[in-house]
Image (tube, rainbow, N blue to C red):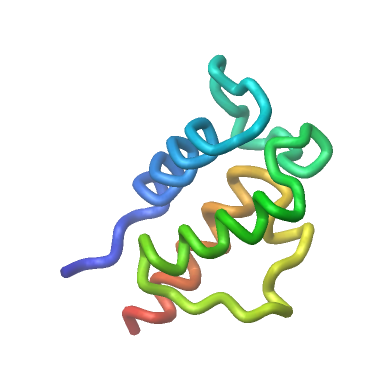
Length: 90
């Protein structure tokens, strides 16, 4: 099984965030919108999306990788997740 490309990861995470965010994001989420400042991700949401990425993509995320830089925007989160997937697949 080949690793998903970055756009597939981003679409998957976007669908997850829209479905599971406590904020109304029915209009979608801009890839550069600050997920933390907008309330799309709070501390519980960060824990939940981390668990989701680990299960969905078969990756392990270390506690020290859970940073505002990696989780700030959909682009950042997708890039971080994709890099973990490609590292795990190598």
